[in-house]
Image 1 (spheres, one colour):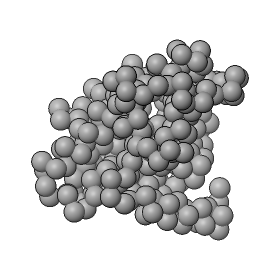
Image 2 (cartoon, rainbow, N blue to C red; image 1 turned 180 degrees about the vertical axis):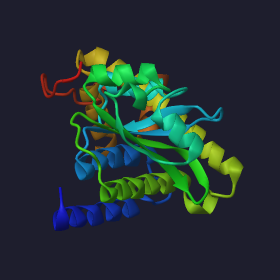
Image 3 (spheres, rainbow, N blue to C red; image 1 turned 45 degrees about the horizontal axis):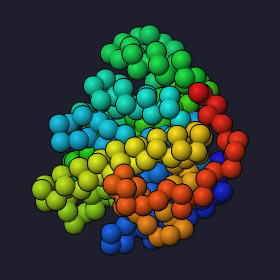
Length: 255
């Protein structure tokens, strides 16, 4: 996506985000959309947003898709990987060639798993606002095409938008509120992971399709993902009310 078409799409996305930043907005759903927009605008294969928990370890909060192997790659970065370095230094790590051992010497398990999944390059962009870093945006590519300076600047802009969505400027200096927001978002993701598994098993479908059906129901009924997930896990909601995905709607091409 190049030129005026990308600029127009980018403007639409920023309007979409601005419209979403209302009181009590669904941060997880917004970050899911931002992850998908990264793939669309940057021509990368996958994207994920990782947040640091109270112990400074990165946890996945949103991804462009729910493929198991992709989520495993994000999960591996709680203690090693480009996103860990990006989070600790506040500096972007871009155009990392996963096929070159010298480029990945600090995180062999992550690099090996990424190559097995079909990725040949990766990028880590800090989630930052002013001098605060709260996580990282992780991008993967299955082709060796490099991201240029303009693409990297756009990736940082999208990461900055994600950061604002998580923290919101008015709470930036209130560390207690900020930590509460981060912990709430991470706890919500854990609940959603559980629900994905429950629905996938119930419907005998992929977790990607299960998540899509769950998310679609929540949006159609103006429910926050975390609230619906809490009701399902607690037994206060009958999952039979959620329309099951059509058989064979999509496949996890990477297993």
